[in-house]
Image 1 (cartoon, rainbow, N blue to C red):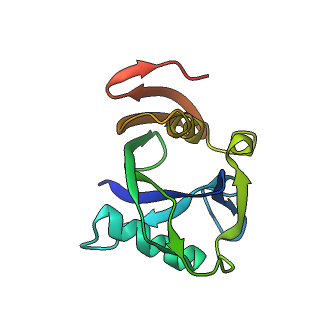
Image 2 (tube, one colour; image 1 turned 90 degrees about the vertical axis):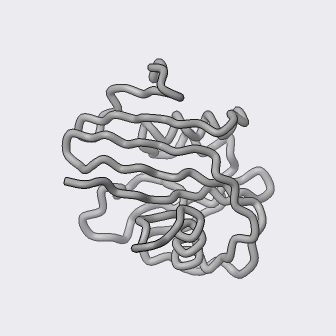
Image 3 (cartoon, rainbow, N blue to C red; image 1 turned 60 degrees about the vertical axis):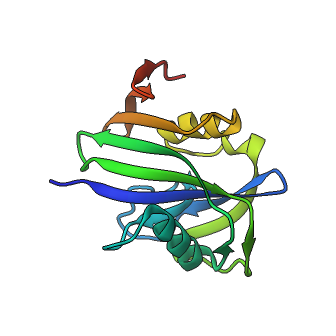
Length: 159
């Protein structure tokens, strides 16, 4: 079944993240969830090229800084394995535009964890908030339920 490669970026400004509330796509596995901005690699793209393109397509913003913070491996009993390159960015140009996948909103970082998120996203958002150095995170799901997590190869408690 092959693997899926994606990039996800959390754009930061003034203590806030730009979040995407997924409300517009039909048959969206992320429907109703708040996520960062990103998507699937196109053929020949690097993780950085994918992140920059997806951010531009979905938000209208051009990133002038990009920091690779970690790689997240998603394992699921219903989807193919996904390798996600996780970025943050705090410098950009352009004007925010309407996104065809949902509503974009600047959310204060301390309020992000109170939004409807994937459980695994809570794990890596905490790592970002703690300033954790570059990490490899493996998140295993059964359906929509996070059943295990490993940080840099070591099992961690899901709370």
